Image 1 (cartoon, rainbow over the protein chains, first blue to last red):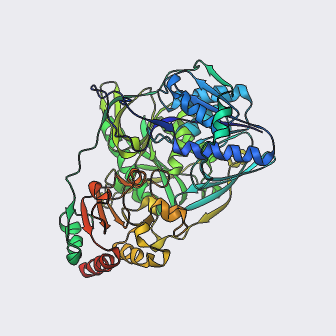
Image 2 (spheres, helix red, strand yellow):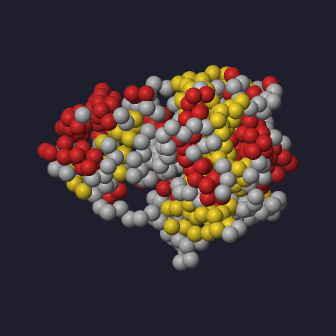
Image 3 (cartoon, each protein chain N blue to C red):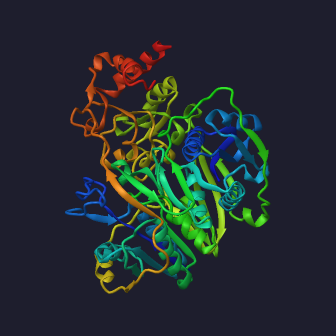
Length: 246
Length: 325
């Protein structure tokens, strides 16, 4: 079985978010980038399923410029077999989805996995677009994924519960916890990752459909108003009369 | 030309987030000088759909096909696309929910529409440009996004738009069929498992949330959280370490890799406020933090705080809520 796992290169969770002086772009200076935490679920689960099947391949795909390669290598160190980088800035979800769909079409992948969304743009869009571009089912967001032959059983989160869904390959799923325990690379993985193939291809398809005209930070908090623990009940009055939320 | 609103229903009722979406859609329609039609998905009653008039909807399309009761991506996408074609919808508005995101992304490709999710404000339509404000960087920033093309899809973040209530106005409910075939139900769920919700309030829909962390010391102490939640009419939630050790179920975990919530009131009890947790709650309108450690980082993000022992403070809060009557 051929797995395609799409990973996104995102600022580390603890990053203080700032923008370029014209507010048009995220300021990357001094920022540590990591594999999108949601994508780690997709990557680890694909590797686990490949191992359980005793065969198959896990290919990692990233749409990004050359500076994303350290995290692609990290994905290879975690256990992916090979990688593809589409050499382009990921302009918007539709642009990225087209790159993924075009590569998936040519590569004959059975299962396409990715995280539910990226922690930077929080789009929650790419999975559905890829599924529609390829004309195959999408299950989003999936909390559990098991395979038996060409049939997958997934648990899909719905507000208030979950759906148990069965689909045949090929399909797309976006992943979230508690699908698996994301793996970290071990020394052997790090050594072998250096020799695994990483192919760079140029983008195809149309341009983006959306454009960020400006970024802004939320207004600063006023600061916390502390209420003494002895008179905790006062808080409830403040929530009703001052904050007007109860 | 019209605005099409996707309304999610459950157990016959229109979801609260869909009332917000309907209000958003009717205001967009007003801005564009047109009317707002809704298409309902899920289990709905005609009487409840007619009440969408209060949110400014003039007409509701409803396909009573019983298999649409539960979410089916293929069928929902086809149904909404057919409604959009029939109504010549230039703007489609849906909730930034698991259903909205799953369907919205497929629809955007099918209808060649531009898509913005996580939207927190009404759009600005100026000359030819159409811009919406959306949350980004896990609640740490906002982005103004310009949507290109003739058709636009907007997924509205919960609790970011006030639902309109024009009492007495009703919408016309019209039966609608998208001519769905068995193939459209290929990804229908084999089974739907509903969770036990404290007080019957769904966490993603809640406008008040009481949440506990490791400071609660064990699952046996959760009654204190539940009592306050029940008194307030709030949903209960927890931090990641709590769900990791199974004190509480995964579906209560809020945070970066859990559920993102944006209620009007978030009360964090015994949660220190790791940055991953903040990412899931920092767009809440009012944050209250109760922690015995005055250095807990969560106090920096809070509007109100109590430095104290949750085991003393929580019963006092519950009592105070009950006294409000």
